Length: 495
Ligand code: LMR
Image 1: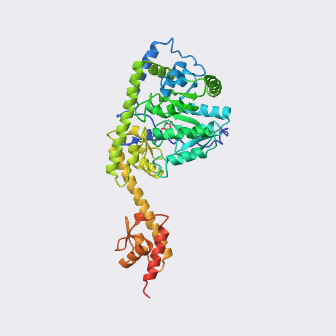
Image 2: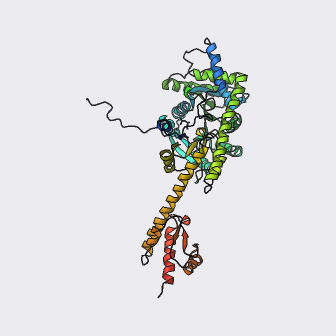
Image 3: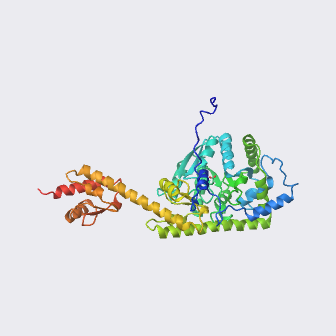
C-alpha cells in the first residue's frame, strides 16, 4: 500500500462531552444512565420536540412563499433577530428602540462564540478572554480558534462547589482595564452555581470603573428559574446601566432546537451608528467563515416568538422542562442525603439549571461508568436530564458505593503513611500491627498515660486505649503525629 499523505495525522482524542453519548449508546447494560450531555429529556428519558415548535413548523410548511429555502442575508433572518432581541432585553427596552443593539444570526451559542471572539480579535485587538473557573469545556477551544487565548478567573471557592464572590471581584479588579470577561448569563455550566441579583449589581461599578467588556454566554435562558424574563436579569442590569456588552444567545436548549443550530450574537453599543458599523464587520466575518446561516431554525423561532399564542405555549413548555429538572434535583438530593448521609449534599439543592456539580472526582466518575454504567462528565457534572423516578435510587446507591470506596481508599492511604512515618521516626518499636489492621482505626499500642501526654503536650487526641481514628490524619499532620508519638515514647521509656 502506498504511503498516505495523512500518515502523520495522529488520532485525536474523543470529545469529553459528546463521546459520553457514544459510550452510553454502545453500552448494552439494562440499567445504564446517561447523565452526560446537557440536552433535555422527558420523564421517559426521550428527547422531545416542543409543541410550540411543531405548530410553528406546520405554519411554515403552509407558507412556502414566505419561508423559502433561499439564502438568508448575511445578518440572518431579520424577523427572528428582532424577536431574539426581545427575548433577551425585554420587548420595550430603550436600547432596542434606539437601535443601539446590532444582532447577527449564528450557529447557536457555539457559532456565536466563535464569530464574536474572532470579531474582538480582529477589530478590537483582543488577544485574551477571561473565562470562569470552571466553565463549559468547549469555551477554550472555540475562543482559541479565534486566536484569542483564555485565562481563568475565580468563580468557585476551594471546595469547588460554592461561589467565591470575593475572589471573583478581586480578579476582576486585578485584570488590565478593558479586559473581556466571559459570564454565564444564568444556569452556569457546569456548576449550576449562579450569582444572585445583589452580586450582579455589585459587579456593575467594577465593570464601569475598569471598562471591562462583559461577554455573556446565554445558553440556558429559562432553565435557571423556569422564567425567561427572570433568567435575563443579569444582561438587563448591564443594559440598563448603558454598559456596552456582547451576548452569545442559543435557542438549542430552551426551544429544543439543538440540531437546527439557531442562535444570535447581540452587541449592545452606545448608539445606532456604532451598532451599524459593528454589524458590518461581524457580517464580513460570517461570510468568510460559513457564508450564511441556516434558515429553518430561525423561521421556527421567529414564528414561536412572534405569535402571541405560541409564545405563551413556549413559556409554559420552558417552565415545564425547568420544573421537571427541579423535581429531579430535589429527588436526587433527598436520595443522596438519605443514602450517603456521611457527606453533605446541600450544594446539589443550592445549584440551578440543567446540571448538578456533584463534587465527585474524575476517578469516581470513571468508576461509575465502568462499574455501574452511569455516564457523566469527568468534572463530576451530572446532567439532571438523564434522571427519572425509575433510576434515581440506583444512581444514589451507586454514588454511595463510590463514596464509601473513596473514603476507604483515603483511610488505607493514611494507614500506610502513618505506618511509614512511625517506622522511620520511631524504629526502635515494631509498627507492623498498624499496617496489619483494617478499617477506620489503628490500635497503636500506646498506653493511657502516653495517650494523656499526647493530648496535654502535643494536642493530639485519641481514645485512652490507644485507638487512633485514621480519619483525623492528612498529609499535613502525619509527620507531626509520628514525631509526637516518638517524643512520648522517649519520655516514657523505662530507663
Ligand atoms: C453540554 O455542555 O453538555 C452542552 O452544551 C452540549 C455541548 O455541546 O457540549
